[in-house]
Image 1 (cartoon, helix red, strand yellow):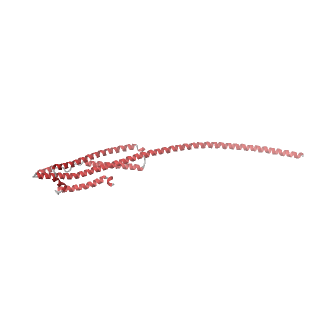
Image 2 (tube, helix red, strand yellow):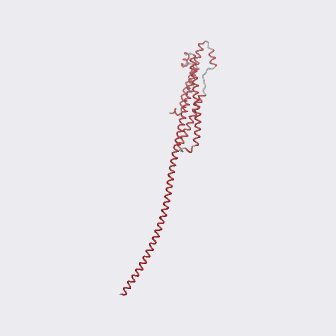
Image 3 (cartoon, helix red, strand yellow):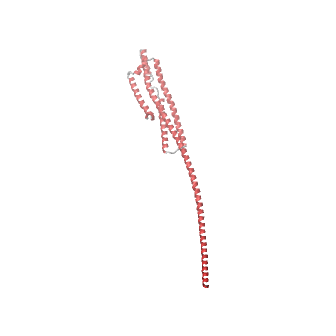
Length: 284
């Protein structure tokens, strides 16, 4: 998991071991110690040995071509990140404003840039690599000083074997650089994929949230209108109630006046009746 997230760690660990073996082998060569992988070249034809050496040199060119492709991809990815970031900034008001989503977006943008930078760095290491163990004028001068053709052939084959062996170490290191560069580019693209997915999710959440706000606003408007209508109805009922109370009050007052008038007439009739009864009694 660690090497997946940080391919450069594995690359550096492996290359450190390869470089140690490379230095150990070179020390043995300088001390003229016998090395089986080099000695075996004395038993093959010179043309075959040259073909092997040519193949190992072509491997360097092939690795550098892969590094060029990766470098171009890194450049395009950086341009894409810059363009998308600029576009997103112009649409920031339409994105879902959430602390966690914002933090995750920033994290994956930084992770993408980090992986792209590391990928470009290891691509440049591969592109800047040059053959380190080619024949030198000193080597050819040494061959010319040998007395017999057999000795010259043997020493030349040993020189080819030495160059083949040491260049193999170099190719392993370069191959690890290329793998590291590609793995970092892969992680950068994955980070960008997660970033774009979160952006799409943010747009979706914002759209749903806006729709919910619009629905709530419509409901609130309808409720406000309903309350306003109810208030108007209540005011009308209150006015009608006041009119009814006024009419009842007037009716009650009129009823009291009628009752007073009736009572007055009754009293008058009672008085006349008493007078009439008193007259009849006096006559008798």
